[in-house]
Amino acid sequence: MSTPQYDVIIIGAGFAGIAAARELGWRGKRVCVLEGADRIGGRAWSTHMNGVPIELGGGYVHWSQPHTWAEISRYGLEIVERPYYTSTNAMRNTRLLVDGEAQAAFTPEDAAQISQAFRAFMAPAKDVFPTPYDPFATDGFADYDHLSNEDRIKQMDLTDLQRNTLLRTTGMQCNNAAREGGYLEALRWYALAHNNDDIYAASVSRYTLAQGTGHLLDLMARDAGADIVLNARVEAVHQDADGVRVTCTAGDFSAEACIVATGVNVWKGIDFTPELSPEKAAFTREELSGKGGKIYVELKGRFQDSRWSAVGGPIISVLPHWVGDESSVIVVFTSAEHPFNAITKESLQREISRFDPELEVLSYTHHDWIADDLVQGTWGNFRPGQFTKYFRQALEPEGRIHFANADIAKGWRGFFDGALESGIRAGRTV
Image (cartoon, rainbow, N blue to C red; front, side):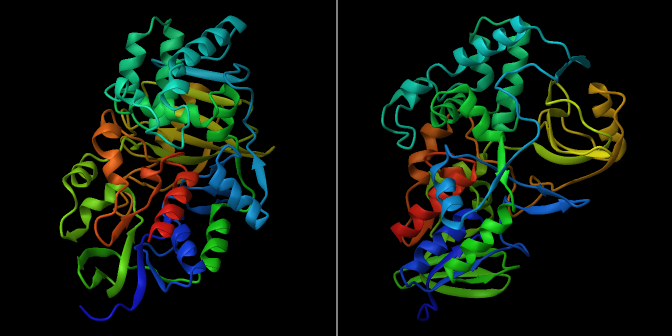
């Protein structure tokens, strides 16, 4: 192998890869970031819809997420509150669609029922993850990792309303059918939110960056000082006693070490020599649970509700993103269990009319993260059993190759905070 051109090659220019590059750049290392797309960001993608700023990928931030908040403080960024936010589990201006029937009027007793079920569902969190950034602090995870969200819901004595709202909430959390998401992951989110309903709700869906996630990524990339090569799809990673050689569509690159900063689902598409450990290989073949979708829809008129929820159809949740007098933009989260046959203006109109037949769809936009071969999924969420089988080993480097992404963060896995945490850790380790 020839003399390394760089000290470190990083595969992937999402938050994890850029955070790792900045850590290494601050320490005087020569770094090259290889990104398969024509932009940086990975599962973060700021853009506009008819002049309204939107996030096609992830976008929510909160001060309960320490790594994210450190970046907000470092760069003097502003946050904005989304227009739909109300108190956790509040039933005001909320619609729940079950079996094609929309319920729009909820009593205080209904709200109390839903809150009671949610707290009972999350009750083990404080004991399983007493210090949530040290997920292995106790062995309590062993009691629950075999359960899916649906398994745990079936164990509980619930009313139909409680069951349906928990199925909706956990389907959103794992971005799939409740049976596909690990119950342990729901407990982890709640522990990270200080075992508090209001903090939980605000942490996952209340605030976004005023100038978008792309602005933060640009600031971090500038500080990293790394060579960033776009349209460089990685095909192979070879390591030996002399270093690492990465083969991609932009050519061959050599370095002393490599950080693979792509999502877990993508690892199986890279030819590693030597091969990945059996645990990592099995993990990437199984993939994580996040397989739903996110669509921004422009509606005619002023959207009046705070949120919609559903069970058993293509739409799981609807939240207003921007509300104007002439039109409004909503964000629609879709089901992996009951997907749209095709996402069209007509299919969206049909499903939205089930909630409110008076609303007219004007336009829509989205990105298919499942079909995107550089990503192959949405936010990282373990399936039942994956915490026990794969998590510890996924954190370990393999020779000169290290791994960093939001899917294997110890804390806010699946969020920007997790990507930042993982990228900073990998950069410092290298």
